[in-house]
Length: 456
Length: 137
Image (cartoon, rainbow over all chains, first blue to last red; front, top):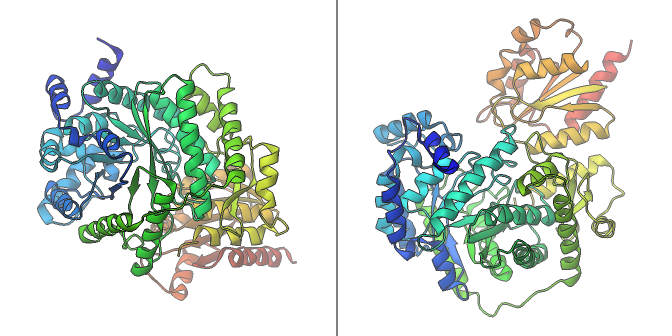
């Protein structure tokens, strides 16, 4: 038995799991409708239309089904399946109890769909009924069982990664374990990708969504992409979120696309398809619902300027709580409308900003590759541990928290303290030159508070 | 002076925690930041270990109320913490409440300084004033 099969046996040894019939799952994936694969849609639509994907997950089958009906009515391109927080922490016993309570009382006791408890046989009925690509949204450090269940259900896009699903969400889940658990996920995705259209993997670029400088976002996107491609994944989406400055978003998109292609070629994976995903504003939203809609609309315009292949939407109820299916579907319809009328966009290029950002990313990537460890995941692990990669406002104990960022007069995010991150001197001088550094720390802290709440 | 700080309970809101850290350092304090998601025992253990003179607990999701009740009993189990300056700040109730009701409640739990929805710099000014007053013979 291969090591992968042995590990499979271990994770399936769990009282809350379906009995897996792997031969049947293999046959299902082999013969599955091409429409279920987002990688297929990317191929078809790559040149003309950005795919629109909302967020959303409810505990019961019935409510999830109803949500999908609303989305389809609103002309959705990609359906989401957001997983509840207990399942994300592998606590299937609590998820099971809360699911039973939700079903009995018609009150939602979970903030998402407990996929493992529902099982793949049940969930597959819903996915194949709608025959649209479904994207799995979770936040799970150990997603091995979840991903086996998802693919068996007909969910052929898997979001996440060892860095982007850990550093923003966890204080002390061991990062080295996360790398190994995600290695399993990549292999399973790669294996199923040989049967039909490829399974698409997507990284979670927004990270903490709090003053993360583009250089850090891009480096982490590239590294998760490389970790995925080296295991044999053939379709991958890099992503980032609206950052508050239109120029910086356009520059980020351009550099990310250029360097993703470059680094994929460096490891002989030029045959993999790389896509770009844009998240509408992920920071604190205005409580005024009309303002929230204006913000969402601006996000859609920027996504078009960036040339994203897919956009992930927010709703007018973002500041209030988990959105209703009506509000969620409304955003999809509005975003589709905005995309339809956005024509003849100008091509904006800022060469100086692109050059600075490219140099920063290349310097950090080089420092990661120069680490003495023998495998890429260990190099990345060491680089996070010693602060070569530093994510502002990550709650995780391994993160250095030495880097400090603020917004300049044009609202671009600038690095005013680089910590251990090897930002080249010339770039560092440029970043600092855009900001007023004569201020004392108290004023800078006040500026940071203001910069975080920029959209409120 | 040495300060131990962190966010109490199953609260992962990290932004204010980082800013408290930054601001305390700017005011010349030596900071031991335990970060988010910290339990009461960990706070007191850290105070003993570092010899800190100030414990500054913060909370955003409001669950501090549940933890606050246990402060006195737990603190009594440690020796030599009688002179420790105890401060708590942030959003100290679930839902809404008035500061004039909340502050006395937390003082009873054993806190010297209570800042409910007070901005960061005002809160730290209060702390510095309190220290100065205490050090004036």
